[in-house]
Image (cartoon, rainbow, N blue to C red; front, side, top):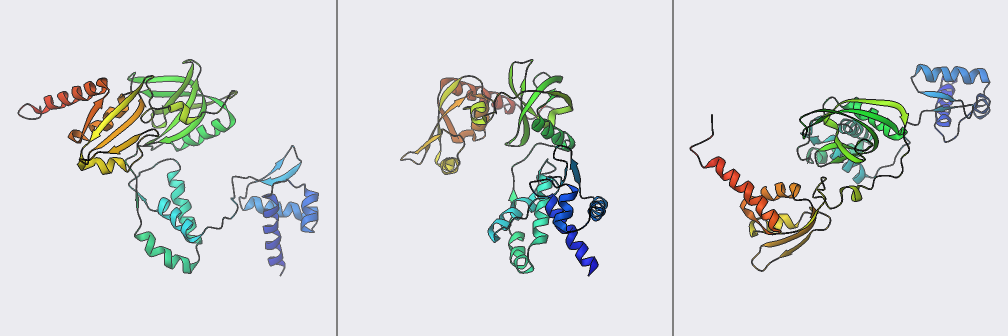
Length: 328
């Protein structure tokens, strides 16, 4: 019985140290109804078990790191099924920060389900699959991702060695990290760059080196993503807003209408089955590539600048195929 009581006491100790308050050695001795010497012996057992408790100098008490355990969560059948489908069965996504952790979390959830639930969930999971859109390569940035999150939380100034495709070379930026966000296919850092006098967006996969300095910064306000990206088609505002009017053929009208491509889009089916698509968008660059993806199934009604842009690309493409064949 002595071994059982000690196991119970250690579990009770872990529960206490996970709480919101810290406990002194005397507090723990009183709660566990043992001597201070036994408390220190039990703390040593936690250390041997690699349970990261620590002594809080401010409160003069002991605690367990809040990152080590998470409180138990009661999931419904549907919630467990949704998490397993979204994490454990993701395919063709490659390596990406947080995704591998999500997969491992899914495996833990699956292993903790009651046998009866597993028998029911198992066949369903085998028939569920989430196929995401192609994503950018993120291999080798796990450490960078974790460092950046810590720097963001502690408001540490960072130096980035960054591969700029626009400049065609590596550049160094000193930035104040404000937000890490996943957009479309990749993780991005939104940061204030004092040298450039404003907010900038950096693709994490292009960061060649991250240095987190000891210097901290004062964050005047949080980044409102809706305000920052504004009416850009995706994430690159160009500083001028256009009213875009597109007309899609019957063949693709239904597919276009069932997706919310932009927050202010308006759609209307015509009697002949075509679809009028209207949107106010900041910049024509991003939306033009989306339009070109529909080929001859869409016409730009307005603005003239966008019609000219699409026509120019179409002529260039046609020129590539006018010859006998591909150049050697």
